[in-house]
Length: 462
Image (tube, rainbow, N blue to C red; front, side, top):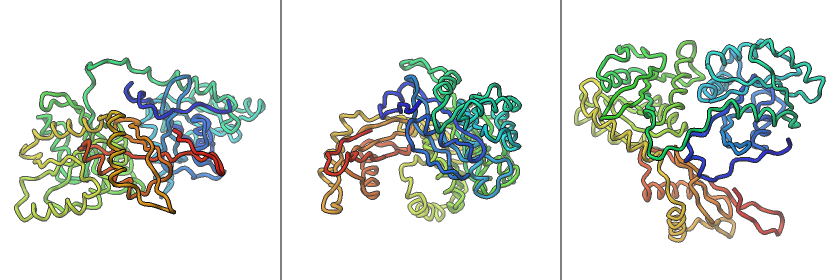
């Protein structure tokens, strides 16, 4: 297999339900990014013959035999990693938690190492389907070496050469077989409970809020910060609807700075945010908005989840504090003015009934789709009224716009050249003014016209 087709920007796939996720994991330098490039059919993931090049989990759209899926490239996983390597390993573990299928890559020229065996134990705890890949099997002799990998207890090793494409077609067939079946298309049919993550720094009132909305003691509440460690799932009825709430551990430190129980708690909290559809971020209205609060908010936005900010302990806020809080909101939350905000008291129940309408509003924006015709009429009028600044004697033009997906809404602008970051922010701001999207992050990306060579005419691509 030399070249695989890739997913295009056709938005129809997002209307067929969630796209399944395949996470590619393994210890450093076993060829994970090379395999990802092989799967998506283009050299997009950075590949270098040294460990640690990939640091974050990076998703790519892919397709095989007409089936679309997302493949997630991860950094090298190590059991006792420290500092930056620990953060890289944490990202890989989050990818495993949020995947439908895990592809575990081992270097067949080295065989199973202690790190590989530790990774297998981590994968077993995830209870996810795992496909074992013996990479760098560039010839038949190396294929025979893969027999020793049966000792890992993950079944038959799939021998491939990600670099040369050997065996990758068969691997993709097996990946498709392991993916969950596509959901049937049900028009206006019933759906499962919406998934809501309660997040925030320690002792801000997350467990108290869960107990209030569920009308029973579902979670342990204590004035000592850090009582909740594991995410607590609860089905609760609120405003006539069943919701799946997840109470999470308070995030005290960055994942790569935490250790022991706190490290794993922060990892599981990150996984809960990834698995949720909307996050309710609790802030203590009586205290200043802190760096920890900002970090929690950034985590939700970067995960692409709908967002409701609940200012808790409102019963303790006096007029002076309200005055200063308004100024803090203007200063500290200016990056996310679109977030839905409610003022509540989890202890007394004040305004807790406003939470469900706020969550519904954020989710509606998260799943909102703008018709292509209306989008292009609007973007044309906007560009005519406020053209892009001239750079180097000419200004790039927007040729066409499309919404590539929802949850969160993703827009792609096809242009004659790159757009300034400031102009892109201007478009996003105007997009919100015109179409709303209250409570949802939106992504706006640019596809400059492809150059065909010196003197050649360009052609938009996607």
